[in-house]
Image (cartoon, rainbow, N blue to C red; front, top):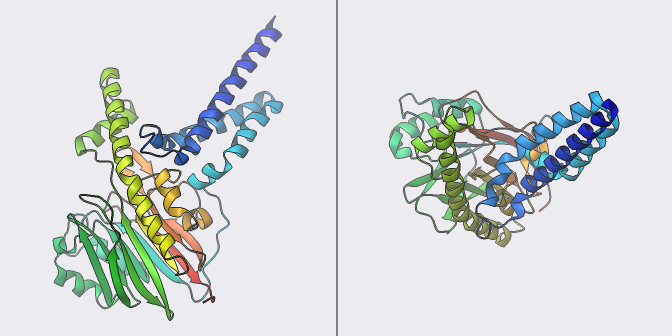
Amino acid sequence: MMRKIKQVTLQIIAGVNIATIVILLITGYSGWLRPETFPMLSNIGLLLPIFIIINLGFLVFWVLIKSRGMLIPIVGFLFSYVPVRQYSPVNIPQSAPAGSFKVLSYNVWQFGDASHPNPVLEYIKAQKADIVCLQEANINALGGQYVDSVMQSDYPFRDTIMHGGDVVAMFSKFPIHGKERIPFASKGNVSAAFRVQIHGRTVIVVNNHLESTGLSPEEKSDFKLMVKGDLPSDTARHVSKMLIKQLGTATKKRAPQAEAVARYIAYHRGTPIIVCGDFNDSPVSYVHRTIAKDLTDCYVATGNGPGISYHVNGFYVRIDNILCTDDFTPYDCHIDRSIKASDHYPIACWLKMSNKH
């Protein structure tokens, strides 16, 4: 009798494990769903880490209880290898070779408290990156003269593009020869392309700040409380419904922005391109997949772990990126958690340009 109960229990657990894998696959490959058609489902990739952890738990369970059952979570991870690696890669660290240059991308959230001396500017100077792409970078909030007094000696070239009050900026040790805004519909977000001369070659650097979630500070605070389990059940249900609707609306706006950036990249195929910035979407999203098509995701190629770059209000996910064409080989892409002046952590990477012309 006990043997029969144990057998039935293991069968039920196996069924739950299989159901978990199905959800793991749905969340992992949700980036293939068009947000215009499936606005609610297009954000379920945010749940991917939960089902990775659950499947890992099942793997440990089967190892301890019935080793043959390990095949279930292992097969699940094999089928979900691509999105799992996209979310949390594992790589052998390699040092950047001579001749590489460093790229830093950072959503500076209007330079924190805009104080003088400014911790964001001091941090950037200390990193000694060759190209710095900033988002939400209203230099006027600090004062242009102050910014130049701090940065000019290290970065003789800087430029900005503003649209709808949003500013993306570039500081560079290499000459900047031109810029243009990538046109897409948005009241307060912008993508811009800067032409930079690097080692005698023209390189396009695309700096992005795509549509945000649109959540108010109060709504973000409620979400954080919900994640912690500190909200009453009725309030939690209301917050979850509101969140699904808001995220779906934002994703519908963000998708055509990503498509516009992808078209720009495709149009300039053959020119070395670096793509940086705040995509405001997860590594397995439609937005990321659309922009990263035919590009190397430098973090996935060389980074380790989930690399969380947005770190407040209960939203812990990597939404900041550095991508490049195959004209470059990336090294040591990482999220730097040493500075907390913004709601984002900076992402940095070394790139080595190939000799092909």
